[in-house]
Image (cartoon, rainbow, N blue to C red; front, side):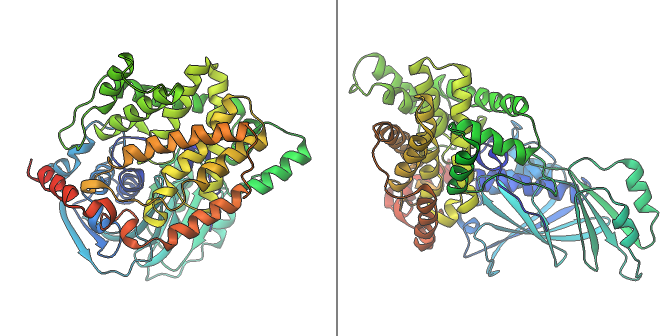
Length: 517
């Protein structure tokens, strides 16, 4: 129905969130928030089914799927400080809950099947989380549908007993796009529907119900989206034709056309992203506590040892390790972080780029440009592959973050366009095959170490590229290879907690201890 080109702010640097996982918690929240609107804020009971062969069967509780989904069904924001208590709040609101783990033969590992009920009747929903917080409702009441949360939408439910012609209504509709089946008409718009239009629609024969959905993504789409490039090769051709040698400039051109926003508006949005990233570092370094957690405040001990000169001289790398740890600890204590590109890899980009910017005394503008550079590299990964560990393992999360960081670090050093892309290619090459095997089924360890490794890799690859090391393989080819490698990984090594470190005796003991505490 509509092409959704990746956006830096929709799919790469964001969402701003609480919770352990973007593909679980933030995505589940967005699904729940759309369901809240579908039911007009009134839900009496909900039945949730996860496929027993998918990722959610084993991770829905410990990685935040339930937490996020319940908060969305309550109409809460993903940054609400009550998020961890959403299940008890759901019960307090009088919403009956039934959760099933059954064989549904779902095509996607992150599939949510919901049956929602209120006094007006039932609605059945099938939706998927596609990585980094991105979602799509793919079926409603047994009919195919596409709702990704990037439009204002009207669902016009048609009375089955009447055969009404909606042709005139559609012709008069001034929005972006529409879809019709024999059960409902779906209207999409980049601007909010006016009360007068809704009233006009209500007057048409055969209307049973009108449901208004608000976007859950920050960048609204339009029917006529046209971006100048969708992969690295196309971008290089565009840059050559337009005689542009700056990667951050190319990133702004892409996002301004994707978002229909001026550069100053996009820069303002990036400043806000950076402020959240810096705040998460400060929160972590101040010390964090959370009961349902594996590790304590590792970054505090690292900083103490660093101040005592008790660590090897790693230069800027030591600051990167400390900042990356701090962000991950902020996440693990339910603090607010930026999923960049995912919550599981949220420490790498802020930890490496902000540490390097401080070390270099970079200006705010230079840091902003570096984040846009990281963002456009992420767009190419999102567009051609995935950020979902459930599909491609941790190489799609920490590996992607490392590639994005490497390009951003080259930008901070005023490296060339080719050097930034070369650094990204090298960093992704070094990350191929990285599995996702959460200890104790928490997005905490070995995630912390993998984020630090990703930041270290980014620094090394940035310097390699600045020294004109030849990556040999083009970035687009590496991204496609990453997806192929990820798809060939066993199901047990793709964020199911059924393989790798997840199944060790120590991991199971930690999980049992956390359950009993």
